Length: 133
Image (cartoon, rainbow, N blue to C red; front, side, top):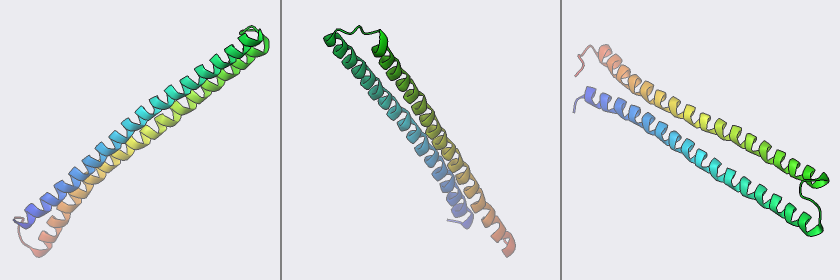
């Protein structure tokens, strides 16, 4: 196989490696999205369980569910849940964006590396004064 063909294959391998790395980062971003959904479900289960427990306790003690201190407790729990949801969403979005950006950079690096391989070959060939082939 000629030197040019080897350089071209090496360049193509670099491009493919960059593309594969981008796919890997995209898969990681998808996994992060699925994990975030799972964490959200867990948070929702905890808030529902906490509210149900509070309501059961109040019912057993004869306190009305939506009056006075119990209402404040429920409102506080709800506010805490909303804050957790908001922070988790922002963090997940940031992690996904970082992974996707890393994927783009990996692809770009692969293309640049492949082009560099071909340019190096062309430069060495020109220095030797021989034609490409």
